[in-house]
Length: 388
Image (cartoon, rainbow, N blue to C red; front, top):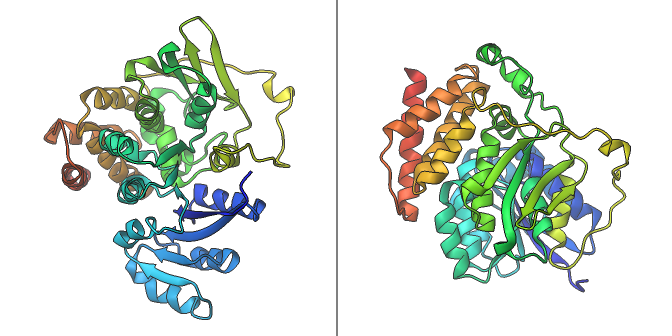
């Protein structure tokens, strides 16, 4: 066990993962200290969190809220800053031990790269970092003392199943999916579902964007690409299986015919708690524990790839590599935002992503600047497709 508290930078502290991370920091005040809190635009909640946890610094990325947050915390000694570039600078502070990257989407990339450069422990909850720039992140980690621990329940499951194992003995990763709210819907009905329908996830409580990604199953495509880089497994050796109960969080099949699975209730506090405890221990908790009844009727099925075509889109992007996953992610972020604003139909998300990928140039061995350019241009292209 550690004798000193670990200083945590929580990027995306007002989002679902960020709030649950702070729950755990509050649960273990002798082990963890919230040193930096970062939010995009949820100023009031950030102020509330700052008053509760008394971090050294808070950053509100959206500059229009800076004065509001600064004035609200004027009677404290908390440093208040703004701007996305400031986040990347702050995570490199020598006081910071662990960076929890819980920002949604492409926005988490720059700060993750900065944290790797500074050799920080990273609890990765921003899957888009590896989706967009997995090749680059992989190269940077090889030249850094930084250690990356997965926070996603599925990748945390893989990590636990692989402890003590040799990667050359792994035959396949089974990546589980709940199937989302439309698992049993007829394909033809998907064109008329609403954002409210799509936000009704059967098992997990998540932010709006990731909940829509679960409904389209794009989230599983992202997680496949993330697993590819986290564990050095080719996409063809990662298979997605629908498990509606969300109790088995993922499985590893070995060459001798053995299969390891990690089970737990569908509660993100569990994988976050595990990641924060690494490499020292599992953190005890009084959370509800799983019972025999929870495991009594576990089922699995193959995903309907005609109804959820973005699974195949993700595999194609992973096979192409280069900037293809970056373009796919950018188009998805734009399309999901448009769907949430009732500007497009649910099935238009598929069309916008496919068309954007068809129309964008491909860079096979991208630099960081190539990723930035591809992201910006793909977003503009996707927006133009929505307007058309």
